[in-house]
Image 1 (cartoon, rainbow, N blue to C red):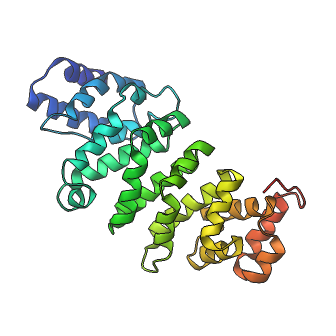
Image 2 (tube, one colour; image 1 turned 90 degrees about the vertical axis):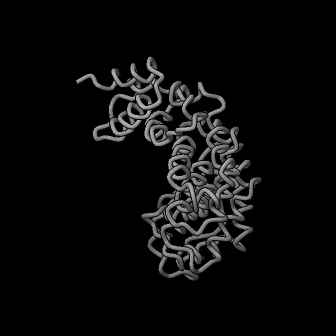
Image 3 (cartoon, helix red, strand yellow; image 1 turned 60 degrees about the vertical axis):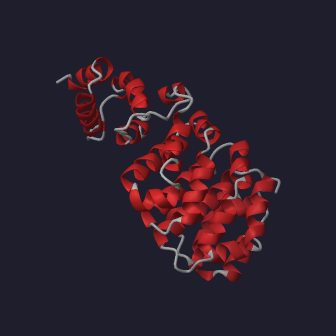
Length: 287
């Protein structure tokens, strides 16, 4: 019906607070719908949404929905707003930090975390944009200080996407304490599986996508490949969750063998054999 361009016109033309609030609420609902509208139709509204981040009547949900489909390319329109990441994180800092926001401003924290997470999950340029704005420290703090399952899961999901990036981006994550944060979660038997699953994606992405020295750093935190795989098995991180890719990478880089896995972790036998077949038996990369 052409309503989306009309909503964007209202947002970019009329500055009355009530009209802006209602138009933004309408835009949020339109963008979150199924099927999603063509992303480019929402882009004219982004400057107004950016202005609203410094207004008394803050609206962030629209950003979380737009960022869900606007970060797939290195020319994402979000990159035109250089202060977006720091502004979003600043909204939490201005409300007493993560813990205070969880207690008193959760309706603001959740869409901010989702927006930042969507940007981290985007193209390499979008991930770097988020890192340059401080998203790494934000998510490490969120993952290590809150017991809220949904928020913590979202934080580790975002960190796992950073750890699926370039070698430089993975190194930023390692230097920022991501693996120590992950180990804190896996060492705690009370950590829910929903969180543990995302934690092992963090670890697995470094193993699969990282440089040799980055891979070794992770293994050292577990006391070696077999110890890490045993812990994955204990915490029910299955082949469907990415264990197959991890095992395959460890075999191909000479960090373990299928026989060693079979001898020490019988439940992982099938995964190890699958990985051995995929590794072309003796096709080993430099460790």
